[in-house]
Length: 274
Length: 293
Image 1 (tube, chains in turn brown, blue):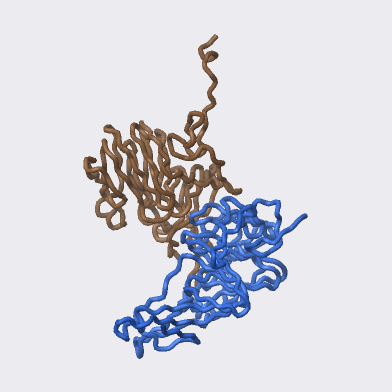
Image 2 (cartoon, chains in turn yellow, cyan):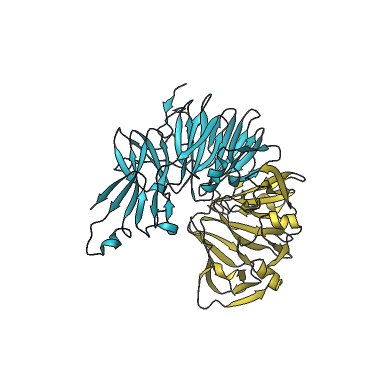
C-alpha cells in the first residue's frame, strides 16, 4: 500500500487564467490574483476577458507580494523581499519607501530607442521595501506569470513592471510596410524567462481580451488594439482593399498567425496608417 | 409568450430572459431614477447577447466595452473604420461612400463607412471609458444622434445627417470664428423595411428622460447623446448678475451656453462632455433665448 492512500484527497483549484494550482477555499489565485469563484468570461468567438482583479487582491511571486488597489486605474503595490528586485520605466513609479534603492539598467539600443520614443534605460528597484506603480489611463492590470523558457512580445509603453528574473530585450519591427502601417511603432518589447519563472505586469487600456490561436489560424486586429502575444505568433501588416477617405485607399490591420496567445485592449488611439 | 415593454428601449421584450434581447438592459433590476426624473441607463451586462435578424451581438467588458458581432450570411452592418477592433478573415469588408463628402470632411465626419457582411465575426469598440447603448428601431422610427457617437447600425437603418443649427461666432474680421457647441451636424437614423438596431458609444454614464409637450430644459450641448426627432433644440445664453466685476468680463468669462430642449419626446445625456470655451464675446449666433440675471 502506498503512502498516497493515507493522504486525504485534496482537490486543488486550477486558475483559468494562469493555470496555477490553488488550495481549496482560496478566493483568488495566489499566482496571478484572478478571482477563482467567478465564472470564466469567454465570448462566443473565443476571446477570454482578462480577469478583473478585485480591489486589494494579493498574489505572490518569488518571495515578494503584490497587492492591486483600485479598479478604474489600478495601482500595483509590491512588498519586495530582500532578495528580490523589479524593473520598470521610470515614469510609472507612483510612490516608494525611502529605503528602497533605485538603479538604472541600460537596455541597449541607445539613440535608436530614443528616436523610436522608447526608453533605453529602465529603472531597477531592489528589496526590502514597498514600491507602487500605475499608468495614467482607465484600464486593467494584466498579470502574466511566465514559466521558464517563455517569450512574450508586448506593445511599446504597455509594460508596467517585471520581476528581475525576466530578461528584457526588444525587437525592431522589420519591413517598411510593417513599420509605416503596422501602428505599433518601431519596437516591440520582448520578455524572456530562462531558468527561473517570473512575473510580468502590463497595463491594458480599457478592457483586455485574450485568445489562443491554433497553428496557422489567422485573425486581423486593429494595430492600436494589439497588447501582447507569444513570440510564436507572427504579426504582419495586412492591407484591406477598403477606401476609407476621399484620397485614401487601403486600411492596414495587423494579421496575427498562430500558434499562441494574442492579447488586445479595447481602448486605443486609432493609428493613422491610411 | 408573455411580453413586456422594456423600460429602456421601449420595445416589446422577453421577461424570461435575464437581459432584454433587443437592447441588453437587465430585466431583473430596479429602475434607478433621480429625484428630477432622470432614469439611469443600466450598463449592458458583461457577455450579454443582443439579437438582430439571424445574427447576434455579444458585449464584452465594462470599462470600454467591445461589441462582438456574429453575422449570419444574410445580415450586414456598417460602421466607421476607426472603431474596428478585430475581424476574422472570412467576414467581407467593403466601402460604403456617404453623400456630401466635402461638407462631411469639413465637419470632421467620416466620409466613408465600412460594410461588414456575414458569415463571420468582427468586433467594434470606441476610445472612451463609457457604455455601449443599443437602440432598437421599429420600421419608420427615427432618432437623432450627436455626431461621433455612432458605433454601428444594421443594414436596414438609413443614415442621414443635418446641420444642428446651434452655433455662435466670436471675434470679428479675420479673427471671426464660428463655434458649434453641439457639433456642426447631427446624425439621423431611421429604420426602413423592418426593425433595425443602432449601437452608440456613450462616454461616461447614460441617463434618459421623457419631456412632456412644451416642457423645456437646459443641458450642456455636448452632453446630449440622442433625442427623439420630436424634441426640438435651440441655443440659450445665460449671463450672471454683475457682482462688481467689470461689465465686459461678465459678458463672456462667466456666461453659460446651453442647449434648450423642447418636448415632447425622449432625450438621453452622457456624463462626460466638453463645455464650450468662454474666451471671447459672442458677436452673432443662431436663434437663441437669452437670460441676464
